[in-house]
Length: 116
Length: 113
Image (tube, rainbow over all chains, first blue to last red; front, side):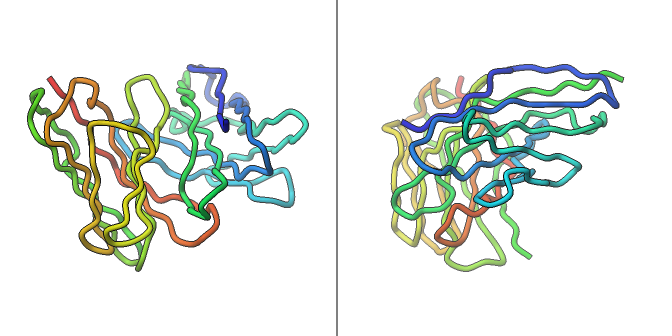
């Protein structure tokens, strides 16, 4: 069965420090991979997505993610974290079957806290 | 531009009471519509999706139902709420046949007491 694992429930980094949020997936074929960010009390906003091609994907707000098939990973990175990046981050994988878009499987989320 | 409206933002309901959450999309036609739930401390779970008017698919067995009376309207309902129905409910839409991006509403925080 398809699944997504975000091993870190909570991460704290200092403002200006680099960030890496981990995501591992289990999927029987080439996955479609996404990272979403959820600010407190708000819906989700897409940061970036991977469908095919270049395995290093650039997103909004200075985020990037790298698809590593051999490790079944899609880790999110940012070179220098800003206080406004404090939020919950979700990794998701797109599901095959039915040709229906949007049927995503989400990880449990990683809460990012940024220290001044 | 496309927008998605979801209301109410917060809702407190007693156990056994009915529920109706509404979601509408503007600026697009024939969207795929979704209801997700985020339980406390957990990730998002797909509850229902719809590819057209009157077409509803349920992903997990539960106490909830969904309806799509109009192309851009998606309603989540329950006849009798359970404590376990508490959570953050998100409506989302997408277009196309590939796994393109989802656009999420701002969500409804439902507390069943």
